Image (cartoon, rainbow, N blue to C red; front, side):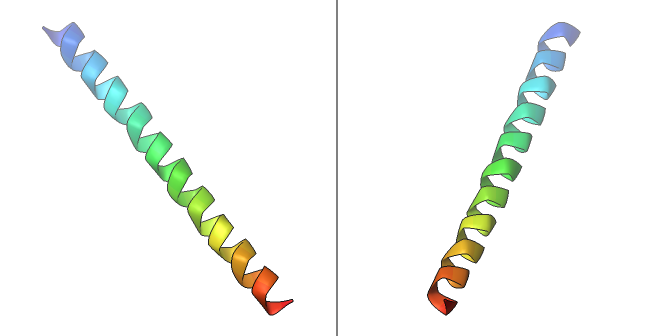
Length: 39
């Protein structure tokens, strides 16, 4: 049982990191668009 819980927690951890990376990339893309418009 604890093995399953550990796997679920690990999967949740990786998913959380993926979501953070996607949000970070989206913020960078928005900044690039703003810079492009300003130029």
